[in-house]
Image 1 (cartoon, rainbow, N blue to C red):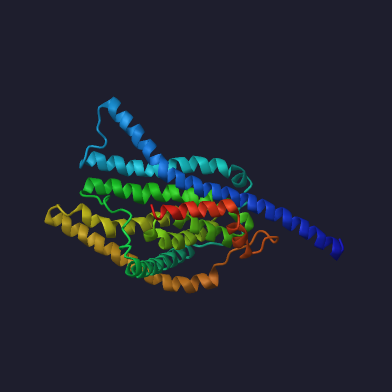
Image 2: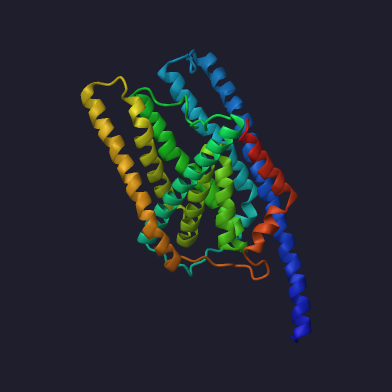
Length: 336
């Protein structure tokens, strides 16, 4: 094939690949809109169903101030957040996932995952500091108030509540979120570049949390989870690391609420555990500095599509109307 014919072929192939990419991006826009609608509508459906079941069984799942109310609300929160998205996204991206081919050129090692995880925690913490600084500036200018913790009002008041809280946050959430974001949403995009896939799914993961308090932290940590899933061709390491991160945060931040009315011995043990988790978190974030140097030298990602070069693929993705609608819908939730 001479140069002229090769050029004509490349132009045709580029147009075809770009069309396929934008068609895929449209699905991501629809997925983002679905995630928003799910978070707005599904909780009411599950509450209604639980109310009907309670009326039939004679159990008041939502009796004010009881442990049963707390258990019901926590479990309903998890069910409404993940059940519908898992089924919808599995169906929406079924063809792309079926055609997915893992990249076995990566040679991952456990230490690599740990360094990337620590780097992600450090980057997320830096993102949180920047978020708080921006919020403080906006508050000074417009009197918007401080960012409210996403779990305000849901803090466990005793150890039984804490066990349910920890199970939801440290087991259910990591498994469901890794399936949704690092399997269903990550794999289809890898055909257009692993860096592109990691950045986009990281940002969607941050937007999905629906609040400024968690956006930067979740986006940056989500990016590193994506890189780990890519290089290991598996979500098992990310499930374990995601769970470890949530355990550290949960024990450090919410265990003290559960022992406020406990005896002195229990309170002392739990305080030590909470402080120990804070120290572990600080050490992990400090290790993120070493992780930066490790990742710069050892970690690289592949571009699997020569017709859609990175990082221009991010621009192509962001200019699809349905993607813009999806991002807009997710941002609106920030203000609700």
